[in-house]
Image (tube, rainbow, N blue to C red; front, side):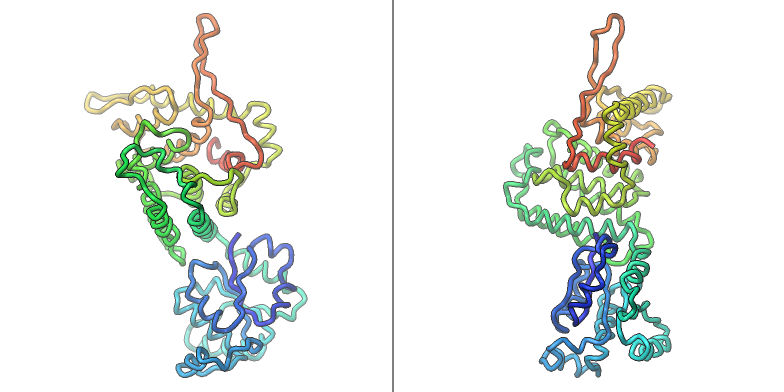
Length: 415
């Protein structure tokens, strides 16, 4: 859920306007208790995604303070139009105008006057809603909901995730179990530096070439896995080690990343670096909003009837067939056979087969690894004169992050 900074000097208004549907879109709003605090929040570009501003803030009781007087020495304003000052401070801090909305009882006088001024300067004001209108909650939703996009959701999920992880105790640090060399092991301070970089990585404004930022983000996210001892790798950590290897040796594979893949890798990465509560955490739920989840009942029915087993069984056979059918010229290195799914994917990358440049294929493989790492293939020789491959069961327990991640990435994995 995204975060709103709500600059309003009458608390009862906020409670009145936060109806059920509005609460589904946003978490508890950040509400400054003074004009000074509102000004300070304009500098916190990681703290919120949207801003709602009342123009008249005369009920704040600090307009005679030294802080406010210093501002008045630079610009002349009164409490009745102090919301416009907050607005200009937000613009100066780089906050996108399209994510600001005025909610005011002064729509026809104060707002109209400033609208004329700003239009004259070729700087149209953001939209406004009259707080006295009985349809205000509905209008808030109609104004704000279309402005929510995948980039904002991804950025908020990463920010909240990094904040959550930095609050974990040192004993929650699990990453060192993958590292053999003592000198390469990390401490909690190292991890906090790492999380600080990730938290601040994505710009406040959605960049026009965001795929470039996503590629750099994944390169930064996976950098720590360079120190990992391959023999120590187990479980879903294989996804992160593979991603690190691929982006290092064939970075073009990651030229067209979308929000879904970045969210998926972020969730997997942090679950391998830290030990924390098994249910999906708040930040993970934000990131999972990016996916079109399979309905719980449908997912449970597919699992119960072993239809999901058939899906990843087909994915396994398909990759084996693709690798075996790849024609080899004398001048290039062939694809080495491998029984396990992720090992074969890595072997394709280690070859110089044209397959290694197939972005669509390797995007799909990263998702499919989730299923086939949790369901290892096993050779069954019980049947006479016949060799079959079975897969160990992947037990999906409800109320776990694995269950939620599985049903959210299902369509990306097998469609």
